[in-house]
Image (cartoon, helix red, strand yellow):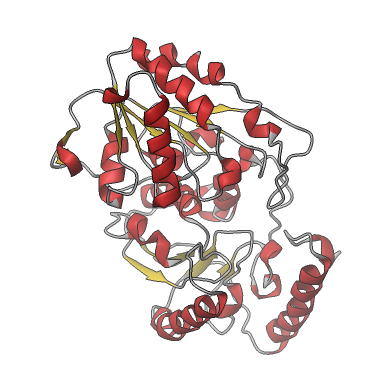
Length: 387
């Protein structure tokens, strides 16, 4: 049934996607030329307009593609919030930015977000059309879908039908066949004709640019000293662990000769960090860096850390990419087995509940998060510091 293919729960949204796909089916049958899957990949475009952590996951596919096709030109289209990841990436020839209002987390009014989206489309799409790609891959299987923007492009469109625009695709793949797969495995499934069978999730490693260089960054921090990074905040407060739990973890770190650096973004997370420092036993060993680091400094800080402790946020994806020992306090808002940070150095603390996933409707109790005790993380410290 066409109505079961979409990753939506709202019946009106499903009906709208289905109606659009009927129109796209007519377009594909009457106007769009038939396309063939290319045998080789010489010049391709990867599209992922989702959030920054999702784009980090996609960087594992860049690594796989460059290993198999080192001469292949790879361009990337994403929201402009992904620029810090894509800029100067050694595996990407050129990055383009169209920020969809559905994924835009800025404080702009929705009308301004839509105006910005239209402006980006008008500027970027003509540039992309000139590039004569062998194929265009749509990596995200959730909305927002950029597939309809490319309906007039004369090359194969490869992606998943679950975000809409499926009739325009050459493959009509469904992302619901393997619900236990990690997102990177779903994305890798689009490349089976060129990369072969999908691998185990532990065999995929994101590829971020090298941030080594000057060891002295903001506030005169010496990155040659031993320190851990604690990142307690998230773009979604429902994913966050209690401050009481973080206080106990930081106090437990007193037994180790190690400094603690708290990172984050925004005024709310800066205030949280101040509260933490005021409540711990040994505040002189803790530094509040929330809001004081550039993105490059943030990555450099994580890449040199002895360990990273965080909730489900970008910090975990960055830490896993740089193969730092990482402990993530997970939640039940989404399927953590699909979205967790990649990397063999990442450990997940979970409290599985029957009501998960609750998506955008978390309960007040949040047993999925609050059921994870501080001791669960503290018991991991000895293992982490032996690495």
